[in-house]
Length: 155
Image (cartoon, rainbow, N blue to C red; front, top):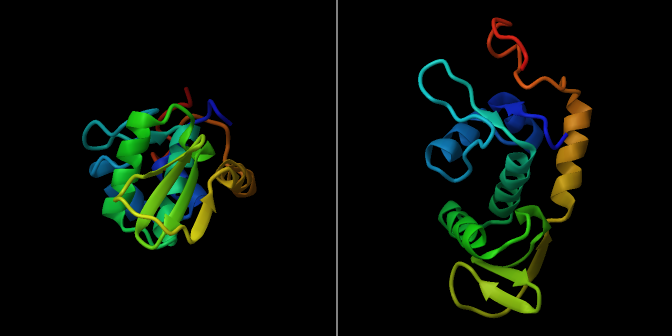
């Protein structure tokens, strides 16, 4: 699965978001597809497995009540300061604060604060995405023939 790519519609279905949300997040540079970005009219975005994990983390943060602007702050911080895969990080949520557990350090990536209330483990994100891919039974082609009317061949 790690080398497989997914169309925008497949990525949205796997992660549990609308295609419109996915499109907005890509256009506003929250999560851009790393396999193939849209490059004009008629081109298709292709998301990697890693992209799916990041999209699922965004959804989990939003579902936990974190505002989209704070989610952007979290991802900006993690991309700059965290060396591990984003889905293996541990995040603690305290109201509108997001605290990253990085080894023995706790870093409030949105604002300075204390008082941890909820723990949002992200290690299950990988398993959730894997199960959803399997349950939706997507073909292991690099392109979704249904999206482009079967006019393109799989690579």
